[in-house]
Length: 223
Image (tube, rainbow, N blue to C red):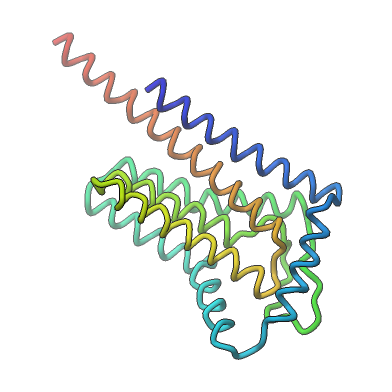
């Protein structure tokens, strides 16, 4: 349990540090904010209404919104309940809605305005930093990857699972930038935020689960 807990804490600290560095750069208007604006205009110049790629980006972004992420979270929780995977069920019930609430809180702390673009593909009135879609995708697909990696037996299969989940998060982040509702720093910070929150949830629940198993084993040995 010591090694497991140490790895979890290390992941939390690394992700939290990455988020804090990006947030500091955004607040202070460092170089990344200039890249944000340039990249936002680059996407807008190449994006067009009604194109096949735009339709695909809209599908990805809407499916991974609040409603879509909630539906996927509920379905995953039901699967864990059906499989009697109580540990994973608890992690899902804490991580998915908790990650959404955390993102809303961070948005109101930073209060960053959305990209200002001419004839945007999407228009939203909420705050920009960090990206809620990207954070939710990081939590959900990250949780799914953790579960599937434990289930499959071969390393090629595990690498395929991780690559698939990372690809989904990247597609969600790309859709938010392409549609003009988020900056690059928004989605990068959201990925770090989601990774940190998921690491907190898995580490906490797993540690409690392992301590419970140790107590049970201790009683059995004493008996």
